[in-house]
Length: 177
Image (cartoon, rainbow, N blue to C red; front, side, top):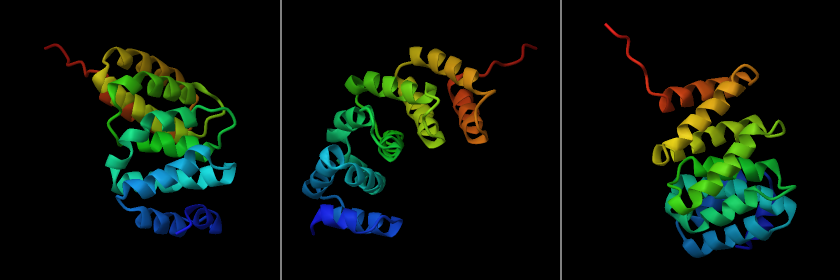
């Protein structure tokens, strides 16, 4: 299969799933997809990011070697929102190695605090940060402050996700009897 030609052939969920099934758990095929995602022309990278997300759903072990490069790609200037969205979507469901947690947290805080970030990117970023905070408890306080600051101004989706995350990261105080 000419992967780039197939990616450009049609922009649909059906096509993304078809390509992700062809890739399956094959590391060589996945590496080809990641090359297109990381270095491909704007539309190719955008469409490849969706396929990467589908592959990660079925074969999360494929993502590990690519985490640093994915984070770097999502942090580039002028990268398509689909790339950002699919990177942080994938990061929600994989174990981010400790050595990359700092840059992942910086990326997600940046998305969370940017007025230009789409709602899905912000929501996925909240979850990534909450997951990292499980390993880095000091991050919980910072995340809590940012989320509480966002609550009054966020969309209903942002408020719902923020409340869910706050419930997870803040210890519940029990009433004194």
